[in-house]
Image (cartoon, rainbow, N blue to C red):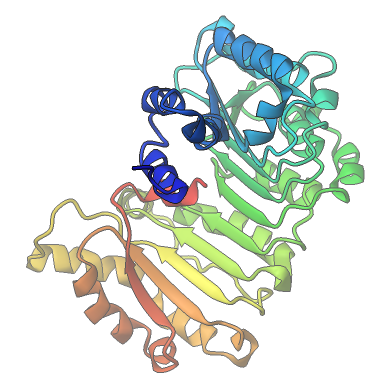
Length: 370
């Protein structure tokens, strides 16, 4: 008895993350080949130069397979041969991936050698017209110019994630001409920004000057220190009413450090973000066990006080935030307890019915990486 093709496709989708099984599925029969091939080529991950050479040769010989690739993930380590994957991929793959939507470049913490960008790299990268999402993770750049040239090279880029980036020297501001960035900034179309970097005045000055913020719809700051709030406030202020969705994360370690360092209490300034529709706070991810005794409850209440709940609640209740539809708190543990505690800390928002407490996976970072 022949199974309906829909059933076969569902079976194949169950092993979509296992390339060994997908290759076996592709050999079952002719009917299974298209679906198996779709999942095999949907996401391409390259770690070694041999991986890059293989996919480049495959796409040259069978160009129709390039239309199946929607996600390209590149990785490099401390090995110079590994960095070759980053510097060579645009020249080898440009024009072969017409439906590529997401590009990720990720280094490892041991990768102390920054990637190099040879002549023609950014021109080749500009041929990836379909890329709308760029993830840059754990990369050490020679200069900010390298970072900015990557961002500007992708003509359709709308979603940008920058996490754990660094530079050699630590911050090469003195070699940058901001005017050259300003001329190119008008072509950027970034609407979603996820940023987790070591904030400082130099970086925020460059970012405010070089990147157009008045088009941003969504911003995620997953890990802030209290000392970062002034820089973040400047960015939010310039973003203005275009901002619709804001996610801010604090951790127990972060807050403890700020308290130990004697940082003066600061507030995030949302004065200019008058069309905000949702505010999500990732502030309570410090728990390491399910039970809550009096000591744990005391810590939680102290952290809620640290968030200046009454101050935030009073601001969000103002008429200028009439567009706000959701005040969301996310935690990976003790959600029911938080659901009983949060409404009392935000009585005005709770009275309007838009306070929400949601559970999230323990490794909550993965939710915001895509």
